[in-house]
Image (cartoon, rainbow, N blue to C red; front, side):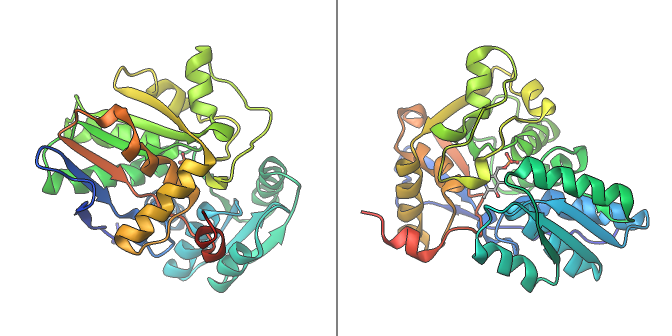
Length: 302
Ligand SMILES: *Cc1c(COP(=O)(O)O)cnc(C)c1O
């Protein structure tokens, strides 16, 4: 198979948050050319579909998954069609179009846009790409852990954000691949997008009635079945933060590394201020990134 579409990303040791006894690392997925880790899985899936003959991809996403599909098509010299719900921002639509994707606004919610994307894939020769629920997406995301294993020993904790759980599935599979069986995984969500935490609390997979959070990229009402299955591991720890805590964590990160991230990523970064990792020796934060943060929103925080 040809070379992958994602880039290997740096693993920085935080100068602000590490101490004599504690090492805090950032895995810089914000530096992927599509601004998030999504390119790892989406890139692998699109390459695979292209090898099977696909010449055009379709996805429902007004966010980073849509951007990753548009980028993958661009990098492969193929075409893409991105369906975004009416709620999508003009800035994200522009970024998707800049990559040469065909863009259609359809439906009030992601679910409606998704129905339409499925219809297009049935009626045309567009190959359908799901934003978080496909084994090849998880395999692509699992390369994050393989890269980590090239430079560090098994960390005590890996901290990541959970939307539909695609990143989580990938990290869990990566941990298994490299044999890091004792690493705990902290799954961060904002309170208004807590599809994983509420499922764990209920003891069964639930569907949220609505999403009420600034962290749009975490706004999946229901996590993937595979994510629910993997969340049964005793190494998995749910974590909830407020929108405000997520935004403040984005601002702190901007201040430390001059890199803008979305609130979805800030949710994970907010764990820096939590007691959960108080006694840890090594913690890796997946800085998942995101293209949807405007400078105005971030700089107007008080
Ligand atoms: C997609 C995304 C998430 C959530 O990933 P899932 O695989 O849906 O759990 C988190 N942060 C950012 C920036 C994203 O783009």
